[in-house]
Amino acid sequence: MNRTLPPELAVLGPCAGRVEGNEDTAVVVYRPAGDGLDVAQWASEYRPELMDALATYGAVLVRGVVHEAALLNEVAGRIGGELLTYNERSTPRTQVSGNVYTSTEYPAAQTIVQHNESAYSDGYPLWLFFASTVAAESGGETPLADSRSVARRLPASLVARFRAKGVLYTRAYREGMGLTWQESYQTEDRAQVEEYCRSHGIEWTWTEDGLRTRHRRPALITDPRTGEESWFNQAHLFHASNLPKETREALEEMFDPEDMPRGAYYGDGTPIPDEDLDLVRQAFEDSAYAFPWVEGDLLMVNNLLVSHGRRPYTGRRTTLVAMAGTGHGGA
Image 1 (spheres, rainbow, N blue to C red):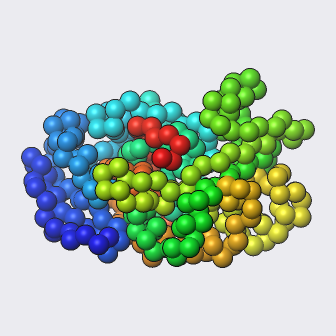
Image 2: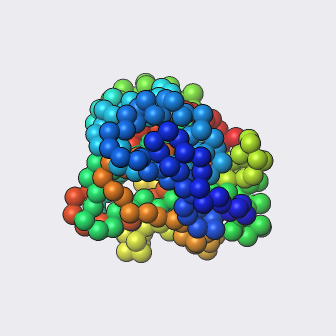
Image 3: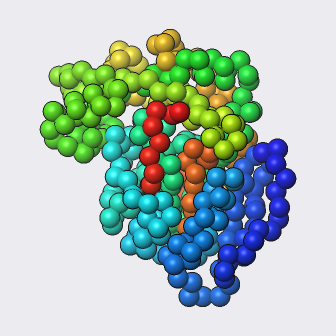
């Protein structure tokens, strides 16, 4: 991170703060003294300090204070303002209470690789609020990686290439192959989909199987406070190299490139070599910091500065998420 991390931060009422992490990624951790913290009132009272910590470090963890969806909905609203609905979806989730959703519902044995939420969209959330209501028996951590550190770890030539070209995302929606267009856009009305695409700079084509889309987005953003660049895209997730080898080979035999469920190219349409994205994945891995969830943990993340993922787990695990604030266009 190239920053000196103070081991102790100012006490916020009944909560003592401490910076934890590694040389790349930091989390400000608050532990309430005793039971009975009114976390919603605490969040309102100390919102300026919490927002400053999010702007500086990118993540804040409050231990053992949010155990159910309704409280997460309230706390997230008090800190982040009006909560967002989850549209232009790329993964399966369930709406739980208000605008609180389950985290991505992938099988327990799967890893969810590091990503900044909805970085493929021109209307991404600024703030993420996670709550662990059921902690896994083992595993299930939500690793964090500072996106500024990821950009610094990558070769300068690769960063310059992505900065200049951006990323072209492609999707092909069809039954039985990931989300349908109805699930992604939360409507059965084709006209509503077309209006959404038109207003968000997405090219679309209706097909016999469903829908194809393509759109371009920046690959990096600049932190307005410091002028530092953050790696902010999902090229490594949309690219075929993210698939298991056998799955990729099968899909590439079945479909032309434009009909693959998801794809990522440089913004000018040229292919991104697997090797480029292997370097991106390694930078995320080298920057990542993870902590074990405890039931009731509240994690706040600055989506512009910090990516998140999920490690495999055993037993039951329920992690809820709310999103707030809207950034536009990756700039």
